[in-house]
Length: 104
Image 1 (cartoon, one colour):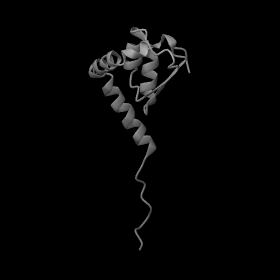
Image 2 (cartoon, helix red, strand yellow):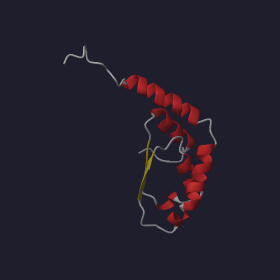
Image 3 (cartoon, rainbow, N blue to C red):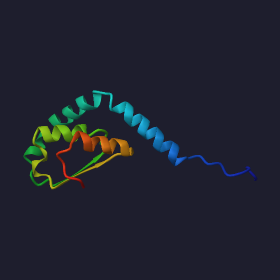
Image 4 (cartoon, rainbow, N blue to C red):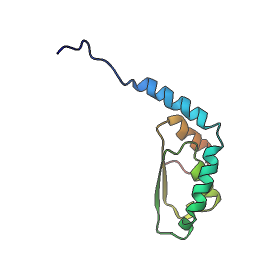
């Protein structure tokens, strides 16, 4: 069967623009901050778990969770805290929101 020319279904540059646009909308929301504080409250046992040295946060957005972890002194014993997000703008925003962290 012949289906004609190959179609391009996925455009990386359009996807990147979309992610950054959605990331910009997320910055205007206090909902992330509320849920981050709730998560940190629920994970309060980390304060006693000094054997946890490395943390990976997926979908870090503006760094709400990290901000609350720092405020509650949960990160004091972490050797490495890695943030990941599909939007480079969100990673940059998290860095601005949490300047006390060394680059990694």
